Image (tube, rainbow, N blue to C red):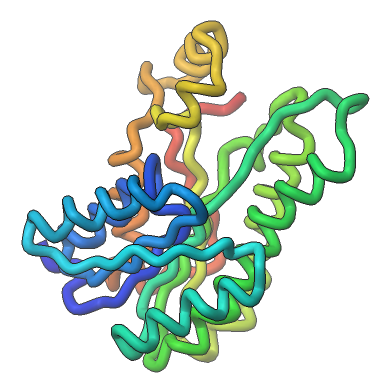
Length: 247
C-alpha cells in the first residue's frame, strides 16, 4: 500500500466525513497527512490518533481557509514540519439549501467564501510548496452537473469549483502540477444524515443505477487515484464518483 509513499498531503476539512476518509486512505497509502479543521478539534485529533495507531504519520492543524491569514499560517506550519507539499485536497465546504426568496447576502457569502475563495487561498499557498510538481484534488459535487431545487447558491459554488479546476490546470500544468475535480453524489456522512430527509435519501437511491448512496470510502479511493502517479496524465478533468446518480 504505497501509492502515496513519502508524499506530503494536506486535506482541508478533514475532521469528519469525506475529508476524514481521504486523510485515512492517504495515510494507508504511505502519505504524511496534515489534517486541517476549522472548529472540530476533537474529531480532527481523533483522525490523527487513528492514523498513528496504524503506524502512519499525521498532524491536526486548525485554520479557516476562507481567511487568507489563516490559510497562510496553515501552510506555514506544513512547511515548517515537512518542508513541502505534494498533494492538496480542497475538501472544506459549507452548504445550506434555501429557496430563491430566502437567499440573502450572508447565505451567499458564507458558501462562496468557504467553497470557492477558501479553495483559491489554499491552492495559492499549497502550490508555493509543490517544489517538484504535485496534485490538487478539488472536491466538487454531482450537484454542479445536475443542480437541485433550492440549492442554487451551493450548486453554483461547485460549478465554480469545476471551472476553476479547468482554468488552473492550464495555468499550473507547466509547473508539473495537476489539478482535477472529484464530484461525489449523495454520500453517507454525518452532515448528510443530519440535514437530509429519509424521503430525499430514497429519492437519491432511486436515481442511482448502483442502488445505494455512496460511502466516504468510495470517494477516498477515487481521491487516492487522482493524487497518485497512476493518474499522472490526467489534469483539468471532473471525475464523477456517484454510482451513476444524476438528480
